[in-house]
Length: 256
Length: 300
Image 1 (spheres, each protein chain N blue to C red):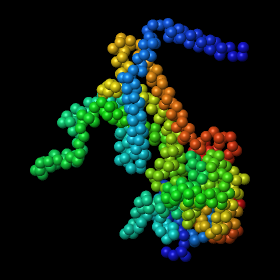
Image 2 (cartoon, one colour):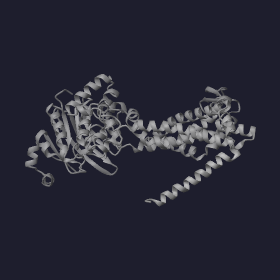
Image 3 (tube, chains in turn cyan, blue):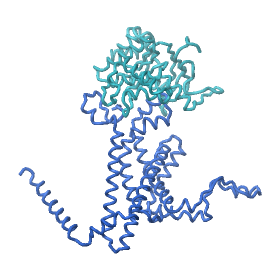
C-alpha cells in the first residue's frame, strides 16, 4: 500500500463476548490525517471496536487493516491465524491509545510515564527519551508537572499526560476511548484543546466521545453506531442537522 | 478526673509490670549473669549466622519461586495454571516440620548416592530394543545435596514458595487491569508489563504479608533440627542449657535473640514499604485532586 491508501480499513468486523454479539459486521475506512468521531449509546460496541483496532480484543470474523497491514492476524490459506505476541506488540507500538480512565502508571512520575515505553520498547537512550518527553509535556501544557505522580494531578492533567505518553511512541494513528467522560465538566476543555491541537497537526484520529461540539469542530467524519452496527455516517454537521435514520434522530434528540 | 476508666487501667498495668519486674530481679532461676555470659559464645553466634543465612536464602528463593508459581497460576494456559494449583495444594498441606524431616530422609530413595537427570524410563525403553545402556545427562551426589543445610534449604524453599505464590497472586490481582492494558497498548510485551508495571504496584499488597512470612521463616528455622541441622540458633542455645543444666536462662536468651532479629527485619520492612509506596502516598489527599486516585492506577 502507498501513502495515499487509507490508514484504517475495517471489513465486516464481528466480535462476540460469549453468546453476546457486540459487533455485527463493521465496515469503515479512515483516511490518513482524518479525524473520525464515533458516537452512539452505551453498549453500542463503539469502545469494543476501538479496542479491536489495536488488538486489545480479538475479532471473531472480518478483517482490520492499519497502514495496509492486517492487525493481529496473518492470513494463510483463507484462514486467520493470530500473530505471535512480539508481532502484535510491534503493531500496537505504532497505534496510540488514550483511555477513559487515563490508566497512567501511578508508581511512576509524569515524566517516567512518558519515557517508559520509548526506552523499553523503542530502546531509546534515557537522554533522547527524556528530551522528547519534555517537549511533549510542554506541548500538552504540563512542563511544570514532569516530576509529579499521577495521584498528585487533576483528572484533566492526568489525561493530558496520558496523551503525551501515547505520542511519545510516535504513533501513526491515535485512538481515544471516551477521553473526557471521567472528567469534571470544567476540566473537559483542557483535554479537548490538546486533541484539537493534535488534529490540526494532521494526526489521524479515531475518537469515541459524547462531546458533540468537538465532533462538529474538528471531526471530518462522524459515525453513529448502535447495537453493534454502523447506523449512519457522514459529515458531522450533515448528520447532526439531517439525520436520515430513526435511531440516529432519537439519539440526537436525547443528547443535543 | 475526665477518664477514670483509663486511670484504673494504667494503674492495673503499672502494678502488673512492677510484679513482673520483681519476678525478673529477685527470682534466681533467671541467672542473668550466666545468660549474658553465654548467649554470645562462638557456637551461638555461629547458630545465629546459620539462622539468618537460612532465613534470607529461603525467603529469596521462596519469593522467586512463588512469583513463578503465581504467574503460572494466572496463565490462560490450563496446564500451567493447574500445575501451580497442585503445587500450592500439596506444599501448603504438609506441615513444615514433616517436610523438613522428609527432606532430610530423601537420601533413602537415592540409595545409590546419585540423583540422576535424563530421559525417563530410559533403561526400560532401551531394554525393549535389546540395547543396554541409559540416557542420563547428569547426576548429583545425593549425600551432598540431601543432607544438612541444603536439605533444610530445599524443604523451607519448597514450603515458602507455596505461600508466596498465593501472596503474589493476590498482589497481581489487586492491580487494575487497565494498567496492563495501557502497557500493552504502548507495545510492551507481557513479561515487560509484569516486571515494570504490574509487579511494582503489586508490591504494596505483597510486602506486608511477606514481612509476616519472613518473620515466620526466621522462627521456623528452629525446625531444621529435624533434618537434622545442628548449627542453628535454638539448638545451640539448648545445647548450652542441657550441658550446664541451666534450662530457663537459655530459653529467655532464645526469646531475646529472636526478638532482636525480628526487630531488625521490621526495620527493613519499613523501608521497603516506603520505597514501594511512591506515588501512593498521603500527599495526594492534601492536594485538590479531581479524581480519587485511591490506589488503583488513578482509575477510581
